[in-house]
Amino acid sequence: LLLKSNKTMSDEDKVTGKDVSDRSNIAARGKAGRTDYSEWSKKTSDLIASLESEEETEKTRANESLGLDGRHARSETEAAERAKAKEMTRAKKALDTYKERESGILEVLENVLPEEKNKNDDASKIRYVTRKDLRPGKRVLSVSNTCGPGTIVLTNDLSLLECKVATNAGHVPGVIPTNTPSTNPNDVNKITSNHNKGERAIHGIIKLNLHKLKDVTVIVRCRIITSTLDISHCENLTVKIEKEATIATIQADLCDKLHVEFRDAPSGKNIPRIHDGATTTFWGADKDDRIYHAGVKNMSIQIFRDGYMESETTADYIKDGAVAIGNTTAEEVQFVTSVVEDNLLTERVLRPGASTGTTVSGAMSGDDLSAGVGDNAGGAARPMTEREMKEIRNQREAAKAHMEQNSGIRILDKDGNEVKKKEKIHDSSEIVEEVYASMPNLDIDAIVKDCEAQKAKGNESFKGGEYAQAILLYTLALDRAAELPDANASKSSAYEKSLTQPFFARHIVLSNRSASFLKLGHHEKALEDAIKAERLDPTYVKGIFRKGLALHAMGRYDEAITALAAALKIEPKNKQIKQALQFAEIRFQQLMQKRMNG
Image (tube, helix red, strand yellow):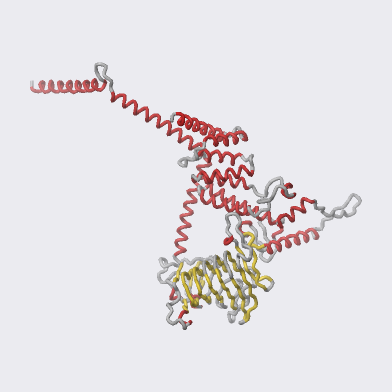
């Protein structure tokens, strides 16, 4: 009976719970015709959420069609580009790691000169730099932030610094020592013959930098492994390179009153005599012995031999004719001073050889005539001057004439008589082309190659997602193209009328830079470049399309519709343009409706 009673009570509890649930449901639904406000509030919230979701979906689709959504790849090509960008990011991290390791070998000496003890005692301001001034593992020396008057002597004692490199490390210049304080705590500062197997020793400092020195004389007596000296932002600086030093190349930037003396200094290609180590080739004897300078005023260079001055010259970037071109300032125009026919000569650098594939000896990539032309055909490229370019043209013409004369091929008529070659008659257009703006075809071709090279690099950066770098490279290409004769030529000239197309397609680069600006959200700049591209070539659909995208991004939907419609007229089957035009029309209608509704 007790168990039955408990069961009955449990059943009653269940009924009571169900009844309570039913009552609450009835209350939720409302009674006697009353409005259930909680139910209507829920429906309203759901409807608003649905509308917001639809609007967000529409916005996402619009961003995807306009290329403004960077979260997901829209094609296999874009997915491959993103994978490539990730790989480039990893490579950049590796490069940053290398630079960090390289900075570990830099020794910076500041405020080198001692405090002045006696104003009448010049000897009190002489500082001798030795191995003791460099910490273990430091092999790149930078002397900076020092004011004189006074003298800094880089002693021959620095030549005893030792770096160990692998025996297969190749040419000495540019070698970075693997021994750093972290890997070689027992740094050696003296010459030793006990080297590990598979290693060889090189001696001296790797590179020398002079930065922000004023009223100072620097005497260089030590060996520099890379044969390179960098000078920047110095004023009233005298550099004396003596016979113990090994400096072939000097790069000077943004200096005033710079004086350089070579006192029995050896050439970069010098091979000392075996029995006494005497210099066999002095600075200036080799073509690679050069001083590059940009933005340097009041510079003087002197070469001394056995105490007597053999040659001297002066240079000043303003007096030498440096002018701003495009985004390049006059201070960025580079000049080079070297020994030509036993005299120092300053010339303007026309272009870097590495960007055109042209070496100073005249070897040109993909050119059969390059073999055997010049002293170092096929060697490393370097910046070239107009004089060197003329020498190359003469060498090429001489080589071509030699091949024609010795080819052994004769043309005979039907009677067996030799047919003489007819002299080429130049028409007026060719003559005008040759003298136009004093720029021959070979120079024009070289500039165009430079422009194409920078554009190709910009395209690679764009594909890798490095849009800021792409903008920089496209800008360099446009600046280089500004040197072409047709950049500012008048259409009324005979030569300009003879052109069927420009030397370089600037409109493509402007359109590409516009796309880069769009990716970074710089819509005004993107619009500016797109308008320029359309002005240069009104039929180039990409320029017009990107003009429409920029206008759309700026909220100028009516103008965007006009631009996109013009692009669609050129390419009626382009789905991307159609979709962008549809979204622009939708946005314009929404904007008009919003204005009408107040």
